[in-house]
Length: 639
Ligand code: WTA
Image (cartoon, rainbow, N blue to C red):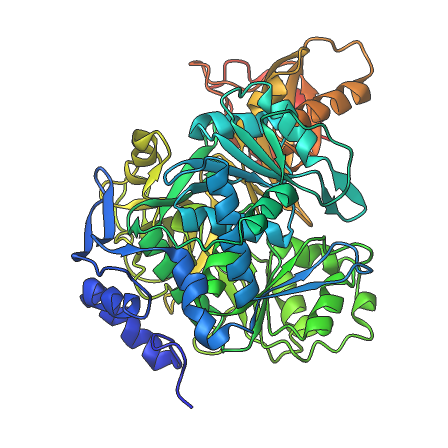
């Protein structure tokens, strides 16, 4: 039987040939891949680009709707196949299986709900929900209607939501009364209410009932999901033909942290994103029809967008969506789910692996796990110990592990081995996917050629799902990604290339932390800390953390040092939780009387980083500091 995906790569030789072809003739290469998708009108040109502005257009002139690719085109052959298997937070609650036909029906229904509530093509809709199937429905219904979705992770605070609503001028919100997460209930609607005090421009809030948490509904603004669906049913469930989109029309905005205080709205467009997410999904995970793919990310992050929803659905795959957390009600939860549904592909994060490692092998007892064929890792460098634990205890030594490097801005996986097709190497993302041309550069932007070298990771040629702009501020996009090194996309990551040309990502080289696989800007955390009335000044750095990868270490100059230090610490942590959300809460706060600064007033973060890392003998030259004595004080006060 032949392969179901004409572009699926099956051997190492085919990989090398595909990569070469993609470099020699990128347009021919991607035109061929794209022709396996459903277009209302074909493109006039495959690629027009420059990195200077940047101005990047893939499949210019083509017309499509991504939901026709993810839903309609599968109905004839795969209508009864599960599109989404949903496992609830509480193992006692029944799971749900949503076939392609069901999902299509629900998306059409909800697109009608959006229309009835005034949403039009080009409007921005903010989605703030837990991991329920209706989240997938909401996202796809926006795409069907041509509205731009902006999913905000359910852990963000009211202030963070308000910032995002204002930045995108989102007039519509879809949320839940609350979300279940382990033994907690997160009161989503009440967080939205707090956010909306500052956002009077929001016209409608559609609320799904999930937790039965008491909430207040504002007349004229807030409507219930179920009531709105009932109205559509009373109208006889009209169809909702997918709205025709230009390949370069925006599909969604996803906010992500950078080295400045304000998160930026990364914009992805319809055509290129569709082609690349499905192409990379099928190849990296070596998806075979009928396989069950379990990506443990939240749809609030890019991994959920690309590898729970669009990539798998574009391939007609079965995607497992899990509402809960890996350690509740106990640390067997992932393994229970793998056995319950006979999962074939498990795609998770190093932080989850390390946390589960901490429970030993007990939680694995009485688990078969024999259905697993492929394991995947994403979000941060995976240390060798975690890699081996994952490979040996979960994969039983027979499942290839794919270490997938990519970013919110790249839309899809750029550097990774392909499961069972190209070799893996622990802690290495290994080789670029076809279409991806990595380059290492030194500080001045000179290419570092050859092997066994380290440098800053750049990409020198566009791939179809590259970031197009940062919403409302194109200059910021240019500045952040395309101006550091002329004519190159700069990733912000450091990287080593070994003797064989394998890439190993070593971590961020900018002021971005990676805490449990989540990106957090140090400036963002500092801004939040500085909101606290007693804080004069602060500096935030990362330090190695056994489970989270990086922990957040804050040095704080505090005006009221006579009170209870521990209380002040808790108070500052609370402030950060309130301003950003629990993911940005510092792990450690050290009160200091001053920060090490240069004579021109610049904070010497390098020194603070070394102290937080307990690398006290390598602080380097401190003689140029304004007040060298402050360093000793900080060293002695290290917690
Ligand atoms: C890091 C997540 C090492 C990297 C998809 C990148 C990784 C940032 C890996 C993007 C990996 C992601 N190995 N580091 N396999 N995957 N990273 O935008 O620093 O949330 O720049 O996208 O995570 O994080 P983001």
